[in-house]
Amino acid sequence: MTELTDPGFDVPLLHDVRERMLTHHAEQQVLDTLLDAFKARGLINARGTQRTDATHILATVRTLNRIACVGETMRATLEVLATVAPAWLQPHIAPDWLDRSAVRFDEFRLPRKPTERDAIARLIGPDGATRLTTIVDLAAPPWLRLVPAVDVMRQVWLQQFVTVGMCQYL
Image 1 (cartoon, rainbow, N blue to C red):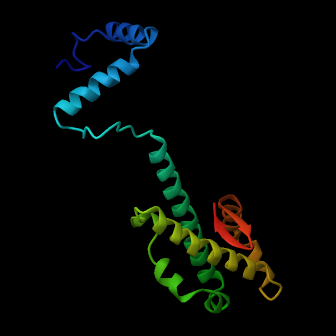
Image 2 (image 1 turned 45 degrees about the vertical axis):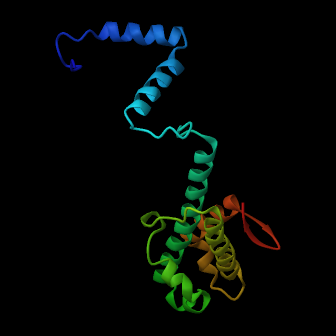
Image 3 (image 1 turned 90 degrees about the horizontal axis):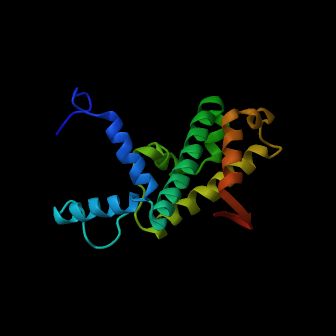
């Protein structure tokens, strides 16, 4: 195979081939030819279309990203509050959150099953809403509302959850 840095490599020829492919809309044909070759060599499974842009794959990635976002936002906010107001935070945090927030959300695998992922979101959502409600409560120190991490968490909760009686994951 000729390297791109090889003096015999003709860059204008490569450009011309690319232009002809685009002009004749041959991208799909090239992709199908490559997929057939990969299947013949056993490099991909022939169970069906294996495109990473499939709707279900994108939806799963989006869901995982949203759960990781809210989980990490909650963990980071609690970490900041534990630093700036440990005495205030102690009675206002669920004991199981200490275990859940010990590891960053991007450092462990979220469950594969949608019902299990939904269960995690249903734990994080109401717990975060409770923390935010407690922070804006008149009994809380007013300066807690000014902590930047709290504001970020408030914004993430507004974006990712809808409140209908209790906090529910979108």
